[in-house]
Length: 254
Image (cartoon, rainbow, N blue to C red):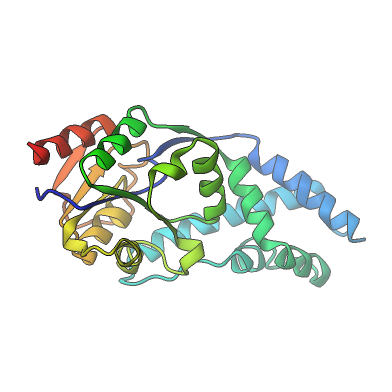
């Protein structure tokens, strides 16, 4: 394992642990239904809106799994998610309205869908990186990266990383190696001088290998074992949590 100049971290599963909120779809549906009614549209019931939001989320999951088979996948746009996955068969006015409001709706969906909690020892890990001239950064897929940025700011973590790269903001998604290359160019480092840390085989381990990073580290999370396809690439190391990652880094500092 090389001593890295930069440590690139996934958001969900590495920086934070996430847990799904059971009521998220009903809450979002109520807000979307209210939006439609304020615009004078009354052709969809609340139950219809919730059903289609749930269907859109499920379709998005299938789509995400399919993109992990591509070499350089693009990211789903906010407009595309609402136009095609949620409101594909809605009347024109209703579909046009959620397309116009797609970005704030994606942001609201991200806020409602999951609870997030910073993983133990994460702040200690980041502080140690700065103390040893290792620049930490975030590289993460996201339907709405603004939700992740809000969390980072509210928890003070935004001041402990040098750059945040989110797929919806840059237009590509892991395992597209461009995600990592964007961060490396921003930090002025070669990918071979970095470690990339993620919690999924088909997105993160594959992305690190394709990008040519110095080491890919798999951090175990609730979703690590959800592997839609066989992955040939292997991580250089596997850790259970940020404390395990810090221990791994400390071996390169001695």
